[in-house]
Image 1 (cartoon, one colour):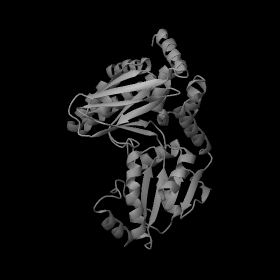
Image 2 (cartoon, one colour):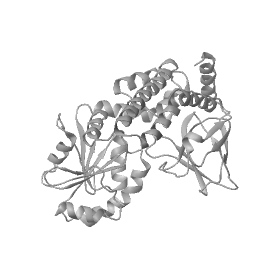
Image 3 (cartoon, helix red, strand yellow):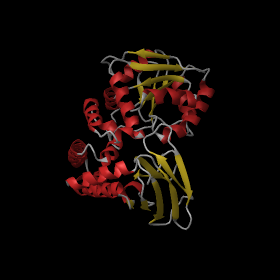
Image 4 (tube, helix red, strand yellow):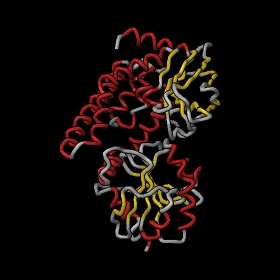
Length: 377
């Protein structure tokens, strides 16, 4: 990227700390929206701040002040559980056009130097990598087994190149707030040591932002989790301990910790809006099966330890809780033969610790009680 862009963006970052810290967001939809409300939500936060605006005649409006540039998202749901368009909240008159069919890919923003630079960067990524990845994913659906294997190899190669492209930008432009924007969307995919080097290299202004502190907390948690796995048995109050998983399969270790019990396992993250939506149904299930010999196990991934503990208590998630590091998370998903790490994910094990279903229904499903009863028998 050209050097003058980096200087310009850094100046914009410093300006946001001065008196001119007001922003406005004038939004329109490129087609008729299904929603009545739109939300401005702090991105990658366990307890995000939320502003809302009513959509009138296909338009919406936000205004306010911001002390520092930070990453937000415009979404059709306050938990970021559905459609999302990430933006940089900067002191400027921002104009947004939302594509209701594809908020993230099809939407555009203008009016602020950081966001306009982001749009240019996104266009480069799309041209170099993303458009080919999207096209290949569509071809994969109708391909035979041999052709699908070739397509997946090409997608993996393009994805590695895309990740290297973004990391290269951050390493070469540590003063640019765009580096923080890029990092916010991929930090969970970066090896812990490399992530620490990137965080250390970023400017002092960037280090004052909320999202930097959130990513820093995640990094510190990952370093701590190299030694042991935090474990919580929650019943009215938090009781925290540590367990050692060793080199055995994660599924086998979980089964061994709860030997003789069938298990309903929830894989989740503190940042996952859909996970939070499901917790109410999980609590209802727990009440129905509390007297039965069934273990409710919660495996939290890609999350900060403090946010993990707070959310367990806030959501009153009775059961057994584990917080995994990045390496163990990859092992777990390899064991259940999942190519991508996605949450929420639900798994059932029988009394012998055997995997019954790596794609078990979520707690709101109509047939979940029947399935759990069969598991107990």
